[in-house]
Amino acid sequence: MPVIVVKTLEMLDSQKREIAESFVAKLSEVLQVPREAIYMFFEGAQLNELAVGGKLLLDNPPAGGKAKFNSPGEE
View 1 (cartoon, rainbow, N blue to C red):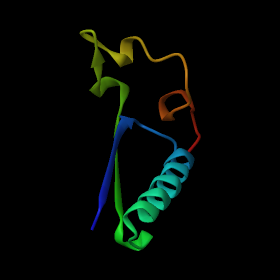
View 2 (spheres, helix red, strand yellow):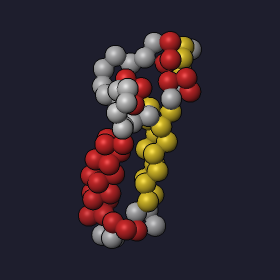
View 3 (cartoon, rainbow, N blue to C red):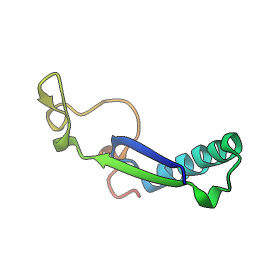
């Protein structure tokens, strides 16, 4: 059973769905195993759980990109 682990800042559910579909489809094709045999885990860190350069991202959130932390009310 192949396993894919995605570690990133918290993503929107819509982003997780899209990534799961594309990654699992490709891995299934390459390994020639059914999609149902592939497990995928999302490990999304909140801004207060990640530091860069000794500073929490909570104090200086990334400006670009779309993620859960900058999309209030959106899943």
